[in-house]
Image (cartoon, rainbow, N blue to C red; front, side, top):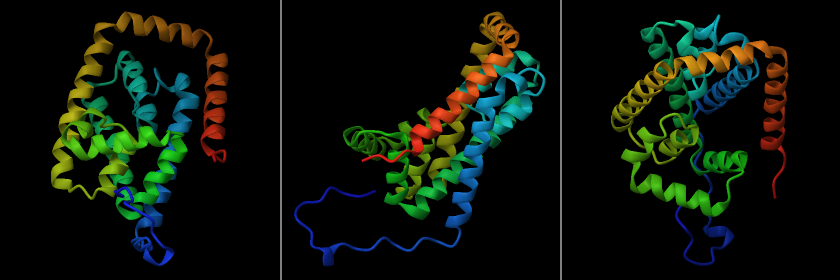
Length: 218
């Protein structure tokens, strides 16, 4: 990750960015594919959560989808394996994006997320100081994995952090979904009752979110 400048720097002193590796376009394509899958899940989850929970989790294993699929009767083994596979794939792809593009990838993500520079600097400093805490706690965060790639954190260090963080998160989400299963079922019955409108609102939210994220920012 970049260090703060200590004084004026001439154009001749600015080092050009390192060349990207050959695999870089492939990981960008993979990342775009994962984003498309997540958008499909966000728009159609109401129609998939009960009858096709595995398909929903393969599209996206966000926390809310992990919770709403538990009452569907999906096997805890299947649920866990899909979550590990889907979130693991996202982690690998985002790490490779960060490793391939470095600070450029970080700037893309911060701009996409619309985060103020002060918050960006604080987050990057926190990652540098406490990587062993940040990675497992934010194990499902794409930007954390991009940061790990830009920082060139080794897989030997990342894999145990990923396993511990995601294992703890899945155990907590499964327990919560079971503990409040009746409340989850009640909420899903309401959603099913107004499925047409919920799907329409979900699609609108996805479209508006993408318009907001991709609009030019100063």
